[in-house]
Amino acid sequence: MKYVDCPLCGGNVSEKTIIRTGRCNNCYAEESLLNLLDHDSLAMRHRVEWKVNLIISFNDFIESSSFSRIFKYRIVVDFQKVINRLNDTFDSRLSESWLNNVYYDISAYKSPKYLDIIKVFFFSQSLIAFDVNNYPWSVTILDNWYYYNEDILDYYFDDRRCHDCGVFKGKQTHNFCETCTDRRSLKRLCSKSTLEKTFESIEIKNLFLDFVNFMLKSQLQFRTVHDVSNLLVHVFIRMEKLLDSTERNKIISFSGNTLQEKINIKWICSTFESYTQLSMSSTNLRKLPAAYGHFCAFLHSQHILSPDVILPYLRIEGRTVEMFISDKNDRTKIEERILSYPSRFRKLLNYYLEMKSKKIYVLEKKMP
Image (cartoon, rainbow, N blue to C red):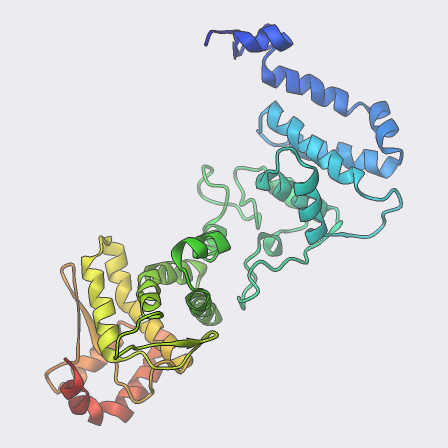
């Protein structure tokens, strides 16, 4: 393909484009946008002044971005199509669900990014009601709109500030602050598309989400919830393999979303020891004991693990994960190990140790 200089901006453009339009695509989009925003043309097309003013205000917002002229033209076209669907006497707030349906119906581009920007603008004008709960299972609201601020038009395209919450961030190469980045990572991990790629059964998907929600209820940071949940995906995948097992000593079965039989210590040990065969970073290896603690606490909270069971001890030697009950009847060593668990569980585990220490010998005899 032969490239030449655009006669208007000097940019590199294919010869075929010059023959067809006489300019590059950016220059063509710029001229098209100017024609689109001509006030008389807008007034003739939309009839009422408030629609014209809204379109002009939206374009002013888009102009504050560093997007290409092609991008700006396309999103303004989409915005006009949405506005055209509103009644001339519209005087309330449109619903997010209505906007989602209308946008994907009328847009030639069907861009989730365009749609998000349109929602941001409507939010700034108090013209949208967010009625779509994408994460109904979560005790914490994860959707982006919840973290928007009223001055979002002032910071949404500002490289110095988080595009969600508006706080000043350290790295201008990132669009979001660390907290919003971690929240968005957690959203992706729990999104419908990710879950469908990861799990086959609805029961395990729901159980995994129950675990994530269990973590969120503990008011842990989004990064901790994401990292621990992501690390334990392996555990839930192994749990799913038990779902349709026809072996005589099947460990779990489901009725709806409820575990009817308890997961035993042997399965827990083999599952966490299987991390040895995975390619894991040193960081994830260091996080594994805490993740194990959260998982066991979740099993207790769901009544999946019997309260009479004393948990085995997880130890990492080099890159090997070992599970065992201390062969030394050394209470001090176990108490020291409790310190490796999240602080919110230490008091419970110490109490648990106090009540169950006499059963260690019996449990050891049951171990393979």
